[in-house]
Image (tube, one colour):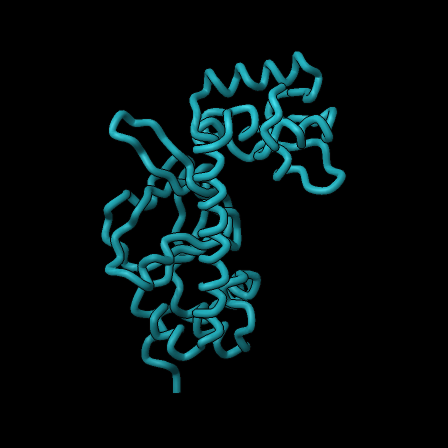
Length: 235
């Protein structure tokens, strides 16, 4: 007999997508099928608001395509991006563990699709599948470490160091070319600065021949020097 909290007709497509989500790693086929019947698929256009800060949350979200930014706004409208959520990532998990008021805003950077899971369904899943709670703890621990890094950068590093660190993180190993997945305005918000300051910093990097910029593509020309800048050495 089917579980009474099943809502959707079974979708193999949904199950295949969910199988790739780290949050649900370790679940067996029956559990993956159960989750696929519980999620609701939603689409958001580029720039569309998904969650407002202070909004009561009914559940949490899994990005299945596109990209979502989670951010805070100051009273004067200045934006600080807290993190970017790519396909397979989740946001608004706070709904599962608190009274469920969003501590930040979330909107689609590009046209995006998400799975939405109601809070009550998520709690049932966690009770039946302890592995999900362990996965959520691991995910939220990584998020906490990321936020500690963001606070450290904003408090202790200048804009050149923040930008160099961001670009290096986007170019692991031997990679030297980065294609920005966000606009320069959004990158400025991610780094806790304004577009004009970001542009001046990029121009300074170019004049010192440590990067080359072509549209939304940035090539690191001197990675060793860039690592020094990211560590706080003045350019």
